[in-house]
Image (cartoon, rainbow, N blue to C red; front, side, top):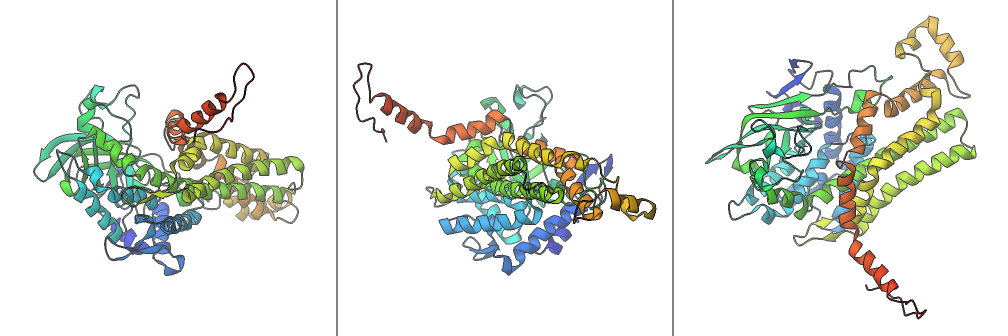
Length: 490
């Protein structure tokens, strides 16, 4: 188990990251990246502390490893995994969406099903299991970029003007492949150790060159990251307490003829192999269970913000306010219940990996794009103008000529101005800042477009049985008034 300090030291490499037209020399001390790097380091320190019970014996290595990277082989393993994921999520209050346990869950599931990476053309199973051993031994933070650039959403890569806009194989060598092109959306990649590059968007047979899955160090020759505008530099931690801690940054990954050795390649120009790696292995449901655990923690935090506003404003006993808080509690509890139901209904697959119940996971995920905006709307309603009538910055509080007026006019009974302002600055960072806007968009499109997210829920609900129950009931009576048992076909 590596420490946070060891993780930060590993980031001091030759990675090629660009921001505001300039190359970033060192992400660990750059104001845009140092805060999230420090947060990630704290996560590694939490995992390394035995008191947090985040380690488990890994049979692949014969040593202790981070639980979030291990393969769950029993119901108890799943429960322990949830505890570990919650430990990290509680530290960030759910505001870090791509912490190392997300892609780590995918990689664990990959390794549980090595046969899914074997074809008549090439056997890459050893690459998958070997990389998972590295993950366990080195405690790596792996980000991913699995979405093509939005050149055209109506066609796939083979039909785009220009060669290799989407990342694809331009050359095969005896010892590996050479990849050219770009992929998005690499959240957290600037402070990750490595990136998993693949494509979750369905491809056609004509897109064979782009049907790849591989890992690459962020510092690899020819790999460049172009980051969006950072929010960590927006202001002080008092004025932007979430932005200045948890802005992961998102990046476009450009691969300029990057060489990838075979031991890092999981899928090699295999359209069907793309689907197998995500769905046959169980990686998609295990990784998204992690995401819903994190989302549950975030919703509880937002509910806490809403309850705190009601307390500070002295309106907690008003029926209309309790109704709003009750709705928020109901929405948060729905997601939490789905997480627990997925664990309760879990079962081992053919390889012995315990998979969370897909119906529960995808049912919650299918509503995420509608649920999160409603949660924010409730918080906005309760906050009202309180988030707008605030001092411009913490500097106002330190100016004696201003402070007396703030203390007199921006306070609540029993709550001094500095504490009231602090609360509402936090609320604004959750609902109105650029950081908040990014999270709004992120949660709405976490699983892709709405038809994609709801498609997962539709396919995993079990409509055949539900329709069979209706058919059985319909068969139980006739137009002549005769009735039968009306029993289920189950």
